Image (cartoon, rainbow, N blue to C red; front, side, top):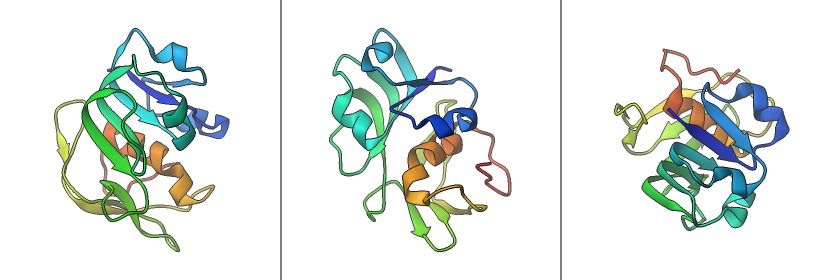
Length: 143
């Protein structure tokens, strides 16, 4: 499994799922067909069109800037596939069935989150990667 995140804040480095590489330069993403690629808002605006992936995780207010088999949007809109149903006590909400790179799917459901080190809405790309790549347990802990 090959995964990547583009424009990942340095503070997330130790929290990325195994097998996910962080890139700060768009050129590092080319030449690989990624199983999963996550883009931050700034990353969406800077990534090159030559990149392709099976699953693309990007902000809901962005047009897919690369070729992808499946696009999963994240954000605070009810149209996003991955959102938060509560900000006061963060709850990650899966709005529709999501494919995982291993071929399994995540059904619509909610995951109460343990206390986070920053605003939950800013952590959505990282939460999405962990949800799609890490084993699911009864409690979904980011940290």
